[in-house]
Amino acid sequence: MAGKVFFSVSMSLDGFVAPEPPSVENFLTPGRQDDPDVRRWMKQWGELQQWMFPLRFFRENLKMGEGGEEGRDNEIARETYERIGANVMGKRMFDLGEQSWPEEAPYHTPVFVVTHTEREPWERPGGTTFHFVNDGIKSALDRAREAAGDRDVRISGGGETILRYVNAGLVDEFTIALAPVLLGSGARLFDGVDAFRVGLEPVRSEPSPRVTHLTYAVHPR
Image 1 (tube, rainbow, N blue to C red):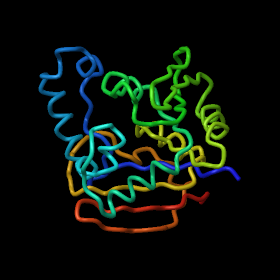
Image 2 (image 1 turned 120 degrees about the vertical axis):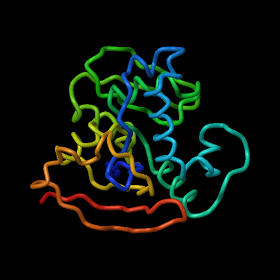
Image 3 (image 1 turned 180 degrees about the vertical axis):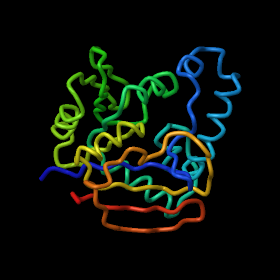
Image 4 (image 1 turned 90 degrees about the vertical axis):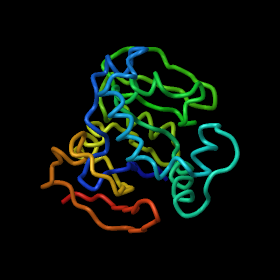
């Protein structure tokens, strides 16, 4: 049996999954991390994701050493990553991550990058290999499904890539970690969603001290 296609993201109370981005050039150019726009982005992104940073699983996955918090947030983070057999992401997310991931990228699965750029697979220590797919989101998902076998495929991001898969009817389920943060601007998760085609069914709502985890099944409407 093929696994599910899902995404899981942190989202602010006003609906953003990432702050307003600085220019890619400023973000990626060495020495430009002191740029005010870059500092603002990093601060807001950290606030959005801060529920994960203290977790034991987060520390283990990034090889940061022992320790970290246990509890339900940690269990959900671990359960999410353990169900993944392959990841799909957009080119912008890959470009930003390529500059900031540690040598052992934190995916530990095949990753299929939706892009117009041709490039040979990029293998990293720890089981992550990035494959660059030039013929659309469906092709990337087909390859990810094959690589994942009976495990699930995660659409890792960014927001525009997730939305393309939702609007194409290719997502089975998603989880939002709703953070008590207001960003004011940035990438809205559902900005441009085809609401007349996408139906949702609540699966789970689970609060924790830092966020509320909301899971929905996705159906044709």
